[in-house]
Image 1: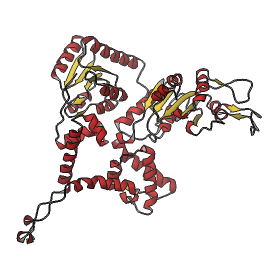
Image 2 (image 1 turned 45 degrees about the vertical axis):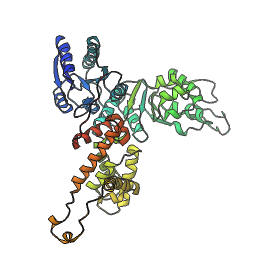
Image 3 (image 1 turned 60 degrees about the vertical axis):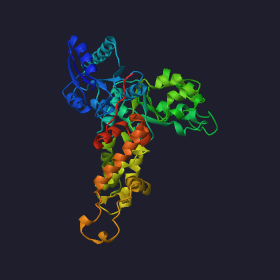
Image 4 (image 1 turned 30 degrees about the horizontal axis):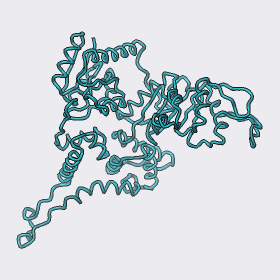
Length: 477
């Protein structure tokens, strides 16, 4: 018997799902809101059926959180008929599966059975692999914890790994973590920067060469593939690998044999391949700029790293860590982090992700000199100005009330002057107007509002809930 949690505000869905699962001998718990569902999920459940569109928030965040819940339940997303966006997002968020309303009893039972079968096998084999050495990855957010779980699973295998993510999210750190937690950790971790490979020397760099193979080849040189023997070969920015080289490398990947430039015989190398990219390799394969057969070999296991903007609670942790390590590196006296600094770095969108944050905060430590505390004034001007513009733009849209003119305005008592709201009251009023306009412009479509504002879907829901702005749910099908 399994414990199944259904999180959906549709009473008919709750009743029909419950009846079906109870008839099969399972225990069923129902919740109509995200907060109630989160509370129930902390009580050891095996499977969660989750509607993404809930009255008090977006269910996507709960998928990330599920990895940290007791029992690490599998999540099956409930989507509307033809809701491609919800289906795509649920899969990107590592849900077990998704079903569309209305779902047949057979489809419901199939999804449940597959999830429970997986859990039984995992329990029989022992606990799922957990990462022991994070390799410099820092953070407590559900998004990064999910990635660490994916790294743990990848480390237990010797299959190829493809790490996807924006520039600066830490793809090489993730690759090193896979290596450090694998059975190959005692052997070399060899990095190949595909974006910097010279077309004239790429084969020599990868496969090596013998003496006299070409002008300037004065001695035998071992290539990077040979150097990775018994270890891990990391192809960074694999999307930049020249198309003409992809075919030969596919053969090397399949047979683990290669021929150094100018050599008469082939050589062998027992390496594990980990690759990383910030590009859409599937789209490149469709365009003919990346070999689809190579892509299939690369993505046996896929790890997706979240951008920093989706790791809100980690920004402060990373900032403090960077300040500490920079002080240690340069022998600078310990410095503290001001609340004002955390407010500014937390509001910035960080297009360069963790790499940009580390560079900016590291420079701020140097800029601070002998100051014992890091303040926003130590940050680059464009970050400070962006923060100030974000605060001031609502004020510009609504001038402050002006005192009345005439004899009655000459009094000095506060009650005789126009009342000016507190900053908090004014900010809330401006925020409410802003999000009301956003929702009107998006026709109450949360996904469209997210695109217009640049905020994540969960952030939109949080602001709407905080400001008391009702969300008009779309009808199913």
